[in-house]
Image (cartoon, rainbow, N blue to C red; front, side):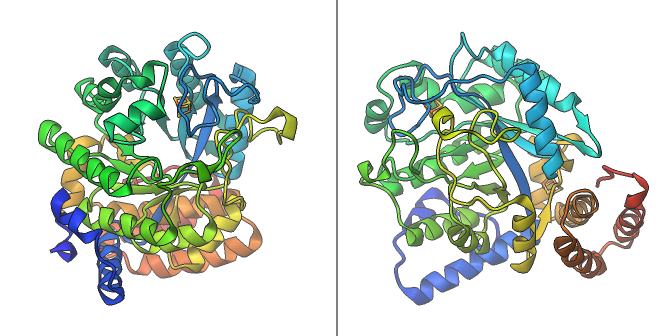
Length: 432
Ligand code: SF4
Ligand code: SF4
């Protein structure tokens, strides 16, 4: 049933969590791999987080940004600092970012976030531009979600952290985030406001992982039933050390084997949803989950406010958590190609109006593969031309040549080939 790529119910998926037999696990991981390749092909989409403010009025026990952490250097980017950050990201080659901020209506108002988004879209540096801004900010009102939609955000991302209400209330003792119902119903308000693409997630390790795994899938089922479209993405962060946070304090922390199982089952349970893994994970652990269905990863990330433009001094620590994959973007691009993936900087769907149910229809009919593969190759070529080292460029050129040959639609193949051949003439941003 999983191999048909039509999804599984939360109950079926939860049952699969009990598999321990090595042969059955192998079969399940293979199924997850097949489903990922069937729907999205070999492409892995790249993004980077951009932290604009770490002021926060909440007290989430697992987060370095929590209100009572006096050791943290609190910052909010000025316009000049924001421009410097965006230029630094564009200089790396990034096209897609996740804008991140703590919750603080005074020090970091929604108006400030809206201004940041408008500024980021307007900053062009050499051939660089940020083409899609996903936004990860606190739960808010329908009215505010409408404002976010109006400035052109990509996905609205909000993690539930844990679906277990009692534990949630203990982990979020004070601040607006303490309100479980308000937080849990945020995606309903976002979708009511017209935001088509929403991204959900839990912080694995906060509660019993089986409970939160089931909660994630039931949340996805609820959104699909109510709005006709499930979550655009699911993120699977795990508890990490941060200033003031020791993961050993969290007895529900999950190991790499369980983590891999969770990703694989998510892939086959919700085949049309992107699965995101960040630099919280090590290279080794990212390698494992890339094989079983992850479709989007961050690279060369800074979790500090202002961390791209300036290397932070240890005494000015403003990071939310510690990275476990500190490689450069160039190293990550080379590594992805060595593993048989096509690194992609594609942002086409949202910019072509393929969001929400329009996006899901294309994915379910299998037609999205006609867009993902050529867009991946064209944006990879842009990266190679503008930012890559000689070694990665050489590797990428070979890959692009091989993969262009495999595009089944002759018109798409011809257009993509033409674009790729002419890219050195300053042409950028062609997309399907
Ligand atoms: Fe603030 Fe978010 Fe950290 Fe909680 S998780 S302390 S809301 S930044
Ligand atoms: Fe994502 Fe759409 Fe681009 Fe495919 S074509 S990588 S689904 S934005």
